[in-house]
Length: 265
Image (cartoon, rainbow, N blue to C red):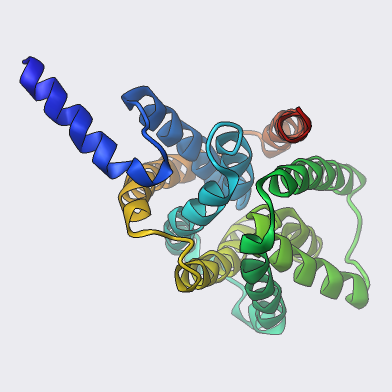
């Protein structure tokens, strides 16, 4: 029995060596955080990276978290594309996807230039600011934005997503003002996020930010998002959208404040 436990600990240590030695409890907590993000995204169409990066960065190296979750949530995006495929607005995507990907590519090359403290500050400010923006735009039911504003938001969203993994709400702001159908919104948003997350994963690998050991961690996360996406899709129409959005917004603002505290103190 003792030998078996020792063997399990050695195995887990080998798997997670790239992100410091993590206990079994840490692994379970990581999977729970990823599940929460993926479950929320399967209902709202976004928020997976936002939630998971914000929480995990409180106790794991922020850069590793950003890089790792790009690959994990690319898998989540694929599942949500399949589940919402009937509503995808392909013609609309053709007009905006290049702009988002250019921003994401630039952001992916900016990430390794940022110091850990600066990443925490940017994460905190971005999470607080974008959640406040998202809340008030939803509450005011603002109509479609001017073209120049859409362009700026889409490019900035891709740039922030590539640099610190949390730019989704800017992209969502544009989509929500244009696409009214819930099914179409979820499907279209996840095509964009899949291209963005998959593309930046490739660029992170090119820069040696995504180490071979991280793939083992990513596999746990990918398995988790599969379960979360399926369960979330099942309950997507049964959970009041507006109440979930408000709860997520409030929670993430608290996370943003905590990240700023971590950077300062």
